Image (cartoon, rainbow, N blue to C red; front, side, top):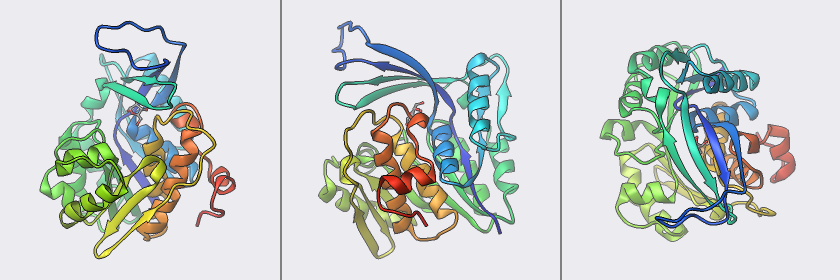
Length: 310
Ligand code: RIB
């Protein structure tokens, strides 16, 4: 059996604005710089997995415009199979307005565009066609909720499919979708939305793990500079993050984590090892500007911290 990563989700063009501090309501501020880069949580995770050496297929939609052409060209150049991507007429490609502040933090507004044209039938076909391979199916929440529901339902019919759901941005998910997650990946804000109380630190994240664990096969909460916590059955742990020289831009660091984790799970069942690789990839990404532009090749990650990646 070959080991594959099938990413179903969004592809955007990111308009990344560098600005000192977030404007207050009613305030106008001048940006220092604006650049355009391919982004979108789905596409970012596909790139992160491909750079770690996984065979990656992406399923999504772009518009019939110049942004869509660029997104397709860049993802193909990463070696990602784009044969299940639909080019939708008369709809613009998804776009994101990303503000990066001097602190390295960011705020993001997504205009879904063609991402909301992705239909459950296309996703079911893609999942069904992975039969006979060991596949990690990666989902996020920048497409319509019916897409994740269809993907999870089809995955239950295809032996050897492992579902990774990154519930970003947070939307309520059905009990059936949550029950399939192995793991469900959340950041602190998404975990807080799910459990209904703040998750400001590792202690609160461990409490959230306990509350979430009965609903899922496994769960991971990413904690930025504190690494990530995970739980699977009766096992759980904290994976600390390696030291970084500077937080330049955290945009897409969570996607670096998810993509690298999925690539690792595609050939090794150990959730703990996959979380370790994901934490390293996320830490690598925050030292660099942009989302996809900040993701490591496997050899770069090995040189960055922790030695060989299995
Ligand atoms: O997670 C970062 C991504 O969120 C950006 O690339 C942007 O497109 C939004 O989807």
